[in-house]
Length: 378
Image (cartoon, rainbow, N blue to C red; front, top):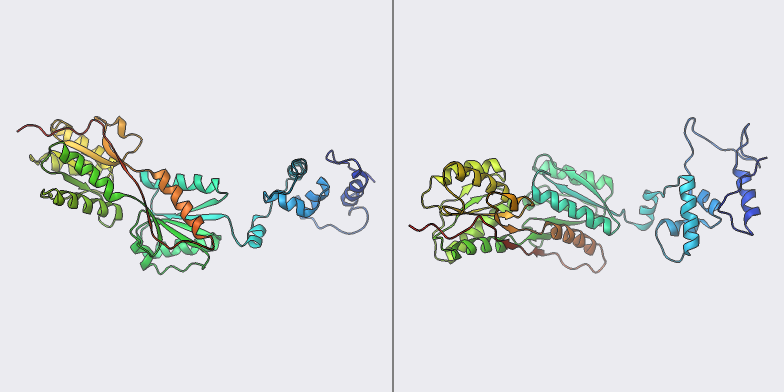
């Protein structure tokens, strides 16, 4: 009978461990020495258990559990020995079993319509980073088509995947109409939406950023400000358009006809061709930087110089905004802070003394570059 001695053994425990390991070591011809049987799947190694790790490290299964779950009360020397035993045996903690025991899965689900927009991608990145910092994984479910059935199906799939909370980046009317059914312990936070007290909401200060943009252009001396709006049905687009109209009205100016795009640079270019033909158009507030980029191209092609003939302001402050020609004046959104507060919001709701639902607004700031100037003299 061959005896295997672990390099992890401590003085005084060698003999006991050797007996255990000898009993668990299969002979060349058949079952383990000391009697008993062992069932193996042909061609497949048996997965190490917590008891195997405990035997190899010379500790109790409870100690292995405490190390696996990151609890205190274990000496550094013991922790190192347990981790070394886990590595040697290829042991992986059973996350499903731990989740059932704790009553939580340490997972946050995220539902969003598209990953093609700057805001969604950067918000999602911040959510994943913040969740990881808090010890949570993120399960992403993109919704291909923004319909009630698609939203309902996404929530159903998340329920099957076992999550503790859901962060939703979508329009709230689809949430309400989808008749969502979630387990009572699953918390929901909605980003970039007008959900009132129905859900916990985290949003950029859309109205405040828009007012800053309009006030900046009026302060330069422009008589009015045209608006290149986002698509109908978008909460952010509607909130910015409403704030643009209100800011002009409160300043005693008549809002020009609204021009609409779809967030893309191509739609900004098409709208820009129409705006270039408006001789009285000396200032344009675009609802995002991508449409502002297309607008700049259209104005250039039509011989309208920016900012000498027409001033342009965007919204988002994407990383490339400073490299536009000319560098774009824009409203900065802190997407990282939106994502962080979404995670903070769902974790706060999971506590017994969770506060009531409401809306958290993340401030914006105007970044002035070279695409805005006083209007041309008449």
